[in-house]
Amino acid sequence: MFMTIALSASLVLSGSPAQAATKPVTFQGFTLKVPAQWKVKKEGVDLRVITGACSARAAECKGFLLGGPQAVKYASEGSPYRPDQPYHPSSGVTECVPAKKYYSGQATRVRTSTTAFGTGRQARFTEWKVSCNGSKMKVAAYTQRVWYVKAKKVIVVDHWKTLGLGAILGKAVWK
Image (cartoon, rainbow, N blue to C red; front, side):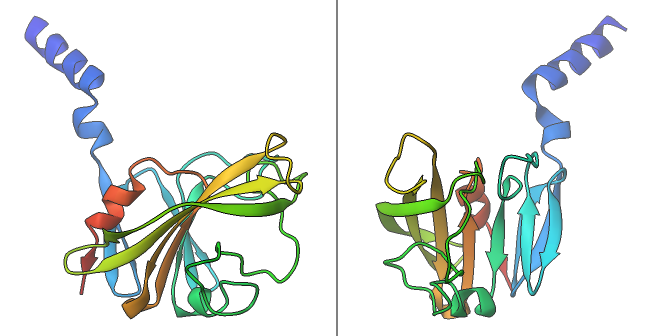
């Protein structure tokens, strides 16, 4: 009995089997293994993966967008995605993601690199710091991370710095 309790306590403290539960998410020819508690919602022809809470103060729930050819085609103010610009499909002013009472403003590129997106595929990764309410960075700001697989016309947009997302995308399985 003592051994069973000790083993159960060890699993709870180490976070092993329960936290390792995953489910597949398939989109545009690839499959990701994501934590089982994440929810997947269809958004037009794209998918929104919801990873956490939905706050009434935020413009969107915590999570990220899996976008295909349509998202790439209209990713820059109604024009095709441009790696030198943040993802901004709207031609107008957009709400600040973490604090929708403000508007998104200036974006500053933090870094750009090439990273694995599954076996044999590469994505261009770009991270942006986006200010809210004009240039007043101290009012509100957020980070936009974009993975773009040009050959497959796939884009992943994360406004919440989703923990482990880069590793999950790196293990994508392509058909």
